[in-house]
Structure formats: C-alpha cells, structure tokens
Length: 493
Picture 1 (tube, rainbow, N blue to C red):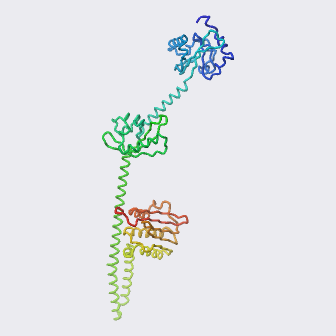
Picture 2 (cartoon, rainbow, N blue to C red):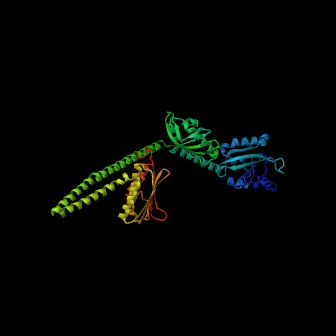
Picture 3 (tube, helix red, strand yellow):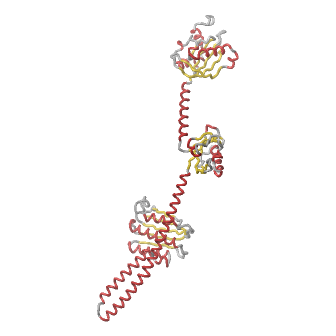
C-alpha cells in the first residue's frame, strides 16, 4: 500500500464520523468499512460488539486479520477481484457464508454482504462496506433443531406402534414397527398406499385422508385391514393427522395392529356367550327339577299323607266307638296335618303350582299376600287384566325376580311398604318392585354376597332383557325389569 493511497486510519475514521455519514453508526448490523487496499477504515458499534473489540484496535488493520489464517490468501484474492471488477461490484456479493476471527482468536460463523459505497466528499477514494451478520446464535439454534429432529426421528423410529407418512398416497417414511408389521424384508418407502391396504379399506381411508387434508379435526379412526406381502391380512386401526409444514398432500398415519386384541375380544365374547348358555341351561334345568320335585311332593307325598290322615280318622272313629286309644290317634292325625302343611309349603317354595296352573298374575298376587303376612308390611300388587299368556321362561324369570326382590326387602330394606306393578307394553313385560326402605348401596352388584341381584341381571340377559337397580329421589329402592314377551329362538338357548 503506497503512502499516496494510504493515510492515517483516524483520518478515515473522522471522515466517517461526519454527520452526513452517521448512518454507519445508526445501523443495527455490524458494518466494517474498507478502502481499496482492504484496510479497515471504520467500524460501527455493532461491529465492535460482534468482534468483541473496540474500534481503535481494528482501525488501520488489514481485513485479513478478521479471517482465519488458512483462508486469508484465498480471501484476499477474492476481495481484490471484487475491488477491481465493476461487474462484480454491480452484482454485489450477497449472503456469502464465511468464518470470521475475533482479535482474541475466537472464531464465529458469519454471513457477509459487500457493496461499493460512494461517499460525498470522499474524492476519488473507493470504499467497500462489508455488512457482517453473526450467525453464532443461529448456528446454535440450528444445531439444537437438528439434534431435536434426530431425537424426534429416533422416537418415531423406536415407537412400538407402526407410523408411516404418506405424500400424495405414497409412503415417504416408515418406522421400524411399520416394517415389522409388513415383514422387515419388505421395503415400504415409495410404495403406493393402496398396495398396503385391503380393497375394502382403501375407499374409507382415502375419504378420511381427504378430510384431514381439508383441515377437518374430527376425523375418526379408520378400521380396516392391511395386506402383507404373503397375502395374509392384519386388522388395524389407523389414526390420521395432516403435517401442516408439508403443504396439503402429506399425512401422518399411526397404524395400530389390533388383530390379537380383536381375536381375544372375540374369544372372550364367545366364552361369555358359552357361559351364558351354560348358565341358562343350568337355570332351566333347576327350574324343571324344582317343578318335578314340587309336583311329586304335592301329588305323591301330599296325596299319600292325605290318605293316611283319612285312614287315621277312620281308625280314630272306630276306637272312639270302642272307647280305646282315641287320644293317641288324634295326636297322630295332628302330626300328619303338620307334615302335610310342611310338604305343601316346601312344594310351593320350590315352584308354586299356580304359576303353571293359573299363570304369572295369580302367582305374583300369592307372593304379595305371603310377603305381607310373613313380614307384617303393606304389599300392593297392580296387574294388567286380560293379558295374553306368556312364554314359560319369561313368566318363570319374572316370578323369580319378584321373589328375590321380596327376599331383599325382608333382609336388607327395613321397608314398611312395597309396590309391585306388572304390565305388558310394546312387546315387553315391564316389572317394577319399589319399596320405601334404605335403598340399594352404591356397590350393590359388586359386593360379596350380591348373587341375587347379579342373578336377576343374568336372567334378564338370557332372555334378551335388561334390569335396572335404582334409588328414587324420594327414597327407597326400585327394581325395573324389561323382558321380551316372546324371546327369540337364540335367547336362553
């Protein structure tokens, strides 16, 4: 650099300190002014902050002092080319990534933009403004973002549920679980979405993908099947979400393999149904056994006891005529009467003959009168008149439920009034038993010993009906039963 070209750096600094050139220091970006010899002639406050150095320590220094040693030669060559080429100066050198060096030796990434500056009053001198953007924070944030992306990708990759991303109905990402779903040797990337789905699933999924891409947020999970390369199918549930930063064509899908879950659910349902059928058969067999035993007690043993009583009565009359042993025979007749009453009571408890002979209404009326007599409470029975005959299974279930409800009243309710209502309505038998007692506990059907309530619920379910255990607002307990008047062929089978 010749003396004619070079002047004291503070002369340049004083020139740039002039009011008309104060825009240099008003700028928020770091600006370093160079003369045509690549000597630093002015820096603004932002540049002092970026290089962590006062302006006095940089003025008069070659620009190469701010460039790493390994890059100085190439940097000086490019700077010289820029200074000597008007075409380059006209096009500017914008947004060039460089590594800058601070006077303390620390490096930082930067982006530099060069432009030729024509300063009023500067004479023939040419100056270049180097606008320097410190990318340290941006670089740190980018590194953190890249790290987060790697961790996020790792989370997606290692997620136990299959995840894939489709762009224009073609797979552009699939995690390890997705590969395992189809077989690890099967490449998913680039596959059309339709080739992975059963034909019956394609239309439904495509419709929901269209809704997601249109911005819908209430898109339901799609139930369907995927097809493996060997032709086997797996039942899946697919949840969809659009990726907002990928235009309007990219959808993320979380694919849950529910094959085993559905199989186990089906097996459980089948097992429950088998248990219900078994329970139905047991209940019906028990009712039939009760009917048989009740008939035998009533018809066989009852008739024999009646005949025995008649014989004893005749013998008593004969002895009375002879004035011998009449008192002993009278005692035997009394014992026969007590035994006959016990037989009739046991027979009725097993199954009242009136349920078979007179129907459900008469049997429930008898239950109500018997409960009122035994418990000393008011029992009101309201029955519909002239009702058509019921299926025997329905009538038996309703009778047993009233019987169980009255047993609960006797044991737990502390009630003084019971209302029993039975009617047929819209193809159903509606039974209501309500008392004014303490009501059902919250865990009535879950506590130990609640087999009676559970049994009522199961009886109703066997016939395709339903049971509700309620505590009305006015107090007490209310049993509400709905049973089909004509159960289907499969009910109770």
